[in-house]
Each structure stands twice: as C-alpha cells, then as structure tokens.
Length: 260
Image (cartoon, rainbow, N blue to C red; front, top):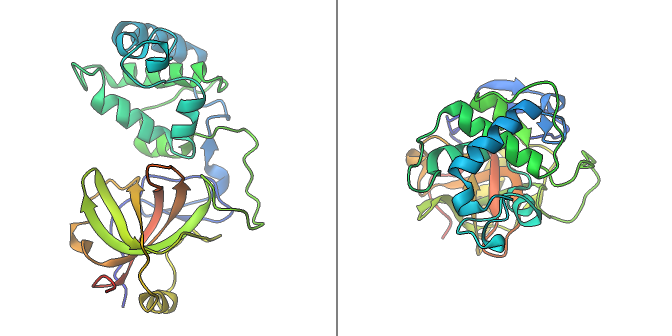
C-alpha cells in the first residue's frame, strides 16, 4: 500500500481542478499569474531604489546582467522570463532573499526584498495594480510567473512543453543540488494534479524503469524517509536542455524499492 508523503507543497498554479496544498483544498480560480496586477507601482519604485543600491553592481542598472557587462544573470528580458516561466513568486523571492546581495546574503529586510521583486516584475512589463505583494509564502506561491498573459486551461492534449502538467515515475534520490527522480519514465501529460488512487499506484509499480532523470522544484520539507523509494511525481514541467525540472504538485510512494 502506498504511503502518502506528509509535507506541504508550496508550489501551486492554475489547473482545471482542485488539489491539496499544505492540507487545504485550493481551487484553480483562486490562483493568479503575474499578469493579474499583483504588486503596486509604489512597491516597484521603492524596489528600484533598493536594487540600485544593492543589486546593480552585479546585475547592471538596467537589469541586463552579463549581457550588459555585469557579473550576475539577466533579471529583465527574454532570458529571465524563460528561466522563471511557470515557477512561482515565492521561489523567486526566496532565491533573492537567501542568496543576495552576493557579498551579504539575507542582509536586507523582508520588505526590501519584496520591493525588489516588485521592481523586477515591473522591469519585465508585468502590470502593477492596487494590491501590494506581501511576504506570506503561501500567497506568493499562489502567483505563477508566466511569459504570456494568454496562458490557457484547455484540456485538449498538447505537446509536452514547459508548463504542461505531467506524471513521472522514478527513484527518489538526493543528488547535488537537491531532490530528483532517477530511472524516470518519460513524462506523460495528465489533467489531474492529485496523487493517483491506490489501484493505479499498484499498477505503476509494475511498469519498467525509465532512463531519464528530472530535478524536483517546490519541495521544502525533508523527504529522507522516502529516499530510494519509487515515487509518482505530478507537477508542471520546466523543459531545459541542461535537464528538465518538475514543479511538484503531488508526490506519492509507488514502491518501497526502486525498480531494478
């Protein structure tokens, strides 16, 4: 019998059904994207001042990063949008808060980091609104970064590209850089983000091991008790030539040992 992984998944995004996030049922219509005017112009103005003081030395004043002669990555433009497409604002906020500025990471206030995020959104032409961003991790996790404002919830099957909700089965391992599924099956598009029922999980246990691997994103609690177990992962895939990643929505044990 499968054992449910007991951790909160902070990543959430729009889909046509509801799922569990931190033990609470969350409907798709409650989810937002950065096109839904999720920050204020005042936040962005304050964020620009913080950015100029603390970030422009590495990322350049116009946020062009290495393309503009800086040392850090681009924070505005096509490369930034591609990197963060279908990830959530809590991931971006946490990345900046814990790692920046490079010489003094985590040295600014939560408000300063949040304002910098707002400025980055403004620099990427995502619209400002009347409601300010808050540092609440669950609220930020409910805001999806999306390149396009015309993202659709269509249930018509589509090619597996970045942002597709998929199912993967693989061996849970903690490699350099974080948790991942190895011996992974090819991602299969799914319409249901919830873990599969027990009967389907039993059937998955008998499927042959795959040859792929996929890194897991949005997992903030320890998975040590399931290391080496065969797991079903569902989430939004991020396609990358350097290795695909999965923004996890659900993670369920299929078998207590990896497939041989």
